[in-house]
Image 1 (cartoon, rainbow, N blue to C red):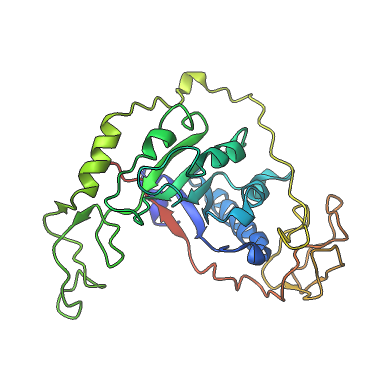
Image 2 (cartoon, rainbow, N blue to C red):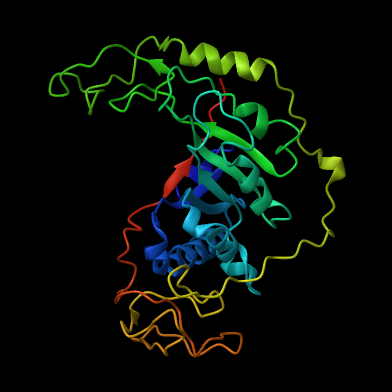
Length: 304
């Protein structure tokens, strides 16, 4: 953050990417939200520009819409994410708004209180990639709710999602700019037909966005209700206090509402707003911030 905040084209910071990949590990959600809280506090303590801080989620049906609502709910603005994004690979080939499930994504996002966008898209199960989902995301069906999409991905790598290439794979022990064997410098060439297909899709679209003149600082936007834990599904009590460093969660906590204990020097006092007997989560013991929140990832929006 210290380095990237210096650039006026830094759009946002992700606190994590796909930390939660199944509904069974939703007990990691409080640690993601705590990371949002801590990064916002650090940004503000340094008087940095208010670069939005949020999360990039895996599109897991068992976590919809609980995770997005959890990260943006609550009475304390200092703890809420400032955007939410999804890595979506549901629209494959020449699918449709209804068939792909995008209509359900739109339903879940209606009246959402912070910006929401697609942080990865570009299914390659059916090749060539047609990118017809762009007409939905940037068109009348979703444009009033969703703030665009980032197509995965720019440079060609082993996973074969690239839109441009800097040359064939080389020996990474020989080339210093190709740590994974794929060059990162030189003259780029487009990957056919994916690059052309995406360019053609965008050429047909004219998203308008929201003009600054239409914005009202006094507008009232209500956060969603915090989700409650349910047996066999979302296992986090959305109103429970967030964890802090040096804190341990008692493994006896369960989604059914059994009392859990947070211990350690950083353990918070019970909050008057907490419900369900103080249950934070229903998973195994979690210590500190050990759930692979290993770093801060910067979000770049790349426009062709």
